[in-house]
Image 1 (cartoon, rainbow over the protein chains, first blue to last red):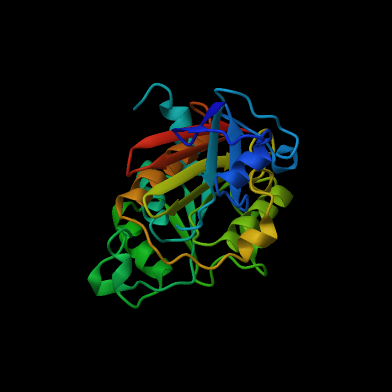
Image 2 (image 1 turned 90 degrees about the vertical axis):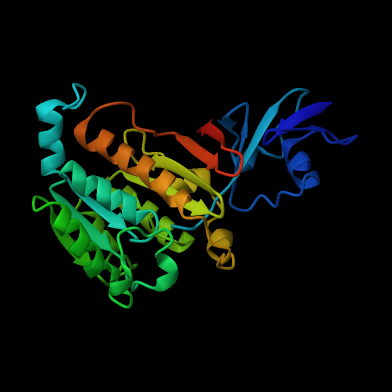
Length: 67
Length: 222
């Protein structure tokens, strides 16, 4: 299964089925990060149960604090 | 004059009041464009003084103003642009002690600050006062914009629920290239004018992100 994450196509690890697992595998800490699937935000409370599927487009935007 | 704005829209801008929190890289273009557009009253909140390292991106200031409070230095430049706008100076910046009172004096708040605790403070105060706010934030080569607490009451803390963890993150010192706040601040000013004058579609319920290294953009909805 492949998904796109931040404009980059990756092959999902064997056994990785949820958004939470995928984010962890890809090294995202989840702190201060907004995550969207196909451009719609998936709230952090839903990451553990959100099933990933082939071809999904995932966007992770890290909160920045500069001004 | 643009048809979408018209005399009625211009009149609404002339009667409007806006609080700008932070007079750094973002605050400079936001204050400049809102003053240029003829905003009636602008609050300038920042506790900092001008330093040499600011000048690469904080286009309100000059070398001769180094060491002076940003609120005063900014007013000098902005007042020279237009005698129409009244400026309220808050050289103590936005603090937990004054935030509710300050926010409630304005129609709109523009977030140009440089830290997470102040952003969450704006989020709280604007929710309590029923005041919309325009979020802008930058880091290195990228920036983001959104509008919170407008018609749907969507909040920054809905998008980023990790308040404590974010406020505890170490202060980032990597900096930013000068044009990043120019891009993001100009979008914030545009959103401010849309909300104040009542034209276009304010960018509520969406987050815009741009990376100037690649010029890749993302818009996510929530």
